[in-house]
Length: 258
Image 1: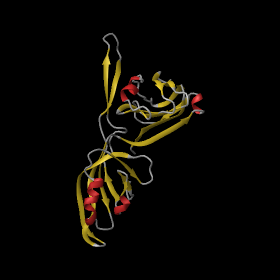
Image 2: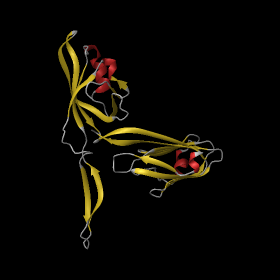
Image 3: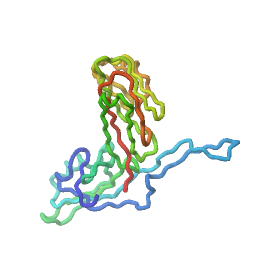
Image 4: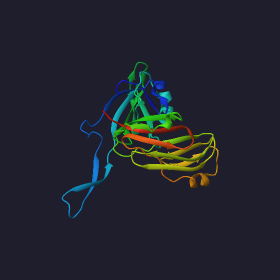
């Protein structure tokens, strides 16, 4: 991370010559964050049973970003791009495909004498992430030839909970009823009376279903069994029944911060 350009909110820091100079973080933070377990015990059993887990922490860095040129004329632009965003944005560092989902807060300017005189040559800020994980976007598309057999979607996320993907279904030339089943946990998604040549999008978070050809949202929702897609950690065997030309799963997997 040190001495590298970064991309935040779709924009490269190279435009301003800004590079991460250093980072200050707690080296002793638990790997994967603090996990809290909810347990219960039956009166006639000696064993406790884990009922639920909760990730109860997030990652935070104190960072400095420095430029070799004064930034005084670009401060408004840098502020609007980088600092005090209303919600988390993607941060890529160097050539890494994984990203932090973060905001920068508690910011201040770094003023100093540099190659071009006295001015603002950088910023200090707190980089607050949405969790104890980095993330990587995954998109896998399967054609109708592949869908004849059960497909295997390998969810490599380090997050030990369900992963909720977006599902895009391209309906073929017959239409009708469609079933997408995660056989690994016997979860079925059913769509009735799909239109020929339609593109159906099922989004797990926030939950919604939409149709490219049918703008009657109520009818689309009524023809859906309300089972939104989710993936287990590891291998998921997925079976398809119905007239589907192509199906795409898009989701993000959690990676440990090292």
